[in-house]
Length: 449
Image (spheres, one colour):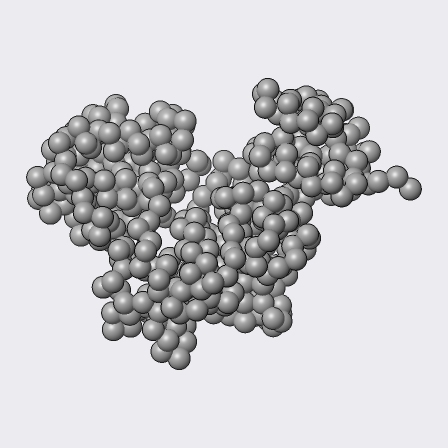
């Protein structure tokens, strides 16, 4: 019998990695891509594989009938024909492929918000504890490359898209940071999105650790199944959890002191929750309390995530451009008593009306982008709202509305693609506009406070 034949759909970074590893194992690989650029064409040539360009339904069905498995890259959009080939076709993603080949323990992190921060912290904690830990998956290197390396622990950030294409995935430690409505431009419903996230624990059992947000009802409910199968449940939250904040300390089971809140560079409520989640997962994966403390003391946050970028006339300006869901915005606002919020962009099919629940924390709102009417409607007269037609206009209007002691927060609750190619480009433009206000540089140790 000849080698198994596999179709790799989408020759992005993860698709190329998948094709390369499968070829090295002696499998027969064919690739397809709907709109390959020169890089994708060159990759196919370098790998020596056939590249089928934008196959129609008939061609795709023919390709599927001749392969044992289809590896679907994360960039393939919802509703694509590859998802409509019927129950007889086996679809997998890069996370499933990497898991099958992993030789060392794997830590998985998922969640609507904060998963990149938590993943980054876990890796730093493990490294500070003397372990070779490497991040992969939704950040860092392709996960297949990471599991083929010399890491002692692999830390995988896994999205709902990636989890949806798993069936045997079983990380030794799996953390679910939080859950709120998101990606309804990809998932058919909130239930579909939740079920995809829940696959992070679908196979957890004896010997595995599930790290659970005690304050999130959806996450708690999903953890019950893992607990029933014998997995160890570890909870985190600001209060009444295995990992919590007590007397100014991040503490773990048995009163273990992980870090003093006063010594942390970032200590907004959502920062502390992320810290607790990361410490719970890292300690379960072999980190030491000292390693966790060292990593937390050195961590000053990631760009565009409630990042303090300037101060002018007693007003602080924060870039939270990565916040593309209402849940992320509400979490960020929880750290401020009085703010002017800049929100809007391209809605991902989410209910923006929930933003109105934060009206009592807001001096005013500046609505931007395609979703500006939805943002304005969300507050329904409960707080002043103005519309801006450029980022410079938004920053100027927010600065004029703010009072000394206030925060101006860019936290859009929407994707950036109406005005910008990425959330990073949006955040960078916000920073540029803030600096045009002649803001005062901020001290490094004040970031996030």
